[in-house]
Length: 243
Image (tube, rainbow, N blue to C red; front, side, top):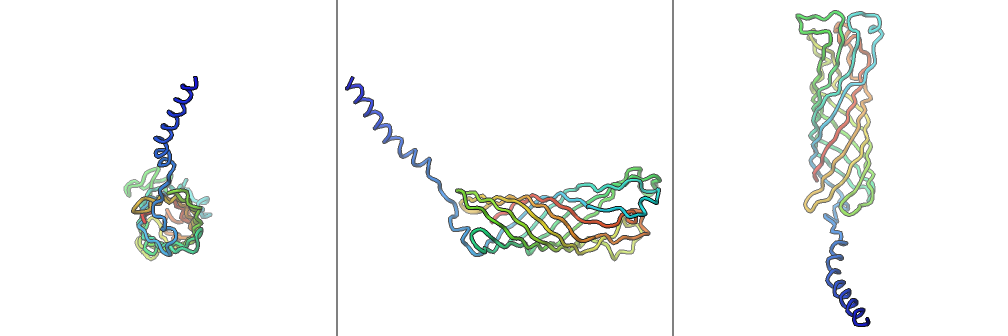
């Protein structure tokens, strides 16, 4: 019996010696880019997909007229291309901006018409699209969590100013859908994750933006415009940043 117990102890000891390097290796956590979060500046390239629409209010003339029966704003998809600059304030807080940020959007309104102008291409339900090519300048504050191995979570909030190159407030053409102001401003907030790889940091982010300025330059001579009062932009963006 003692011989068997001694044999089991020796076997267990040998197994422990053989398994200890493997267990040690499995428990080891290798940190990629350990000094990344202590650098004063970070730079990156950002690309994203946005889902945008207009939040609007009806003008009193909408209830008085009988041509346009229903107006709805439709979600549309666009893309974002940006260059990121991130300034470290301390371990948990950063100041971030995108000095070169282009946003391509396509917002749309759906109108239900009682008397559609069919020779002009109108139908009972007509969709009118509005293209947007916007240069944005956001300024954001980031709050970063502690780093967990090769993962870090953050929340951000900030303000932005935008200039829409495609806006047509000064256009005098009579066949326009509606006229829009070129300048807009708003607020935004989001959530993101830093994934640390050996040679780069990948950051997926989900962000919501609210435009605060009325971008509608109402024109009573345009039937698709005179039924709408104020227009504010709304955007949800999913993006990837590579640092």
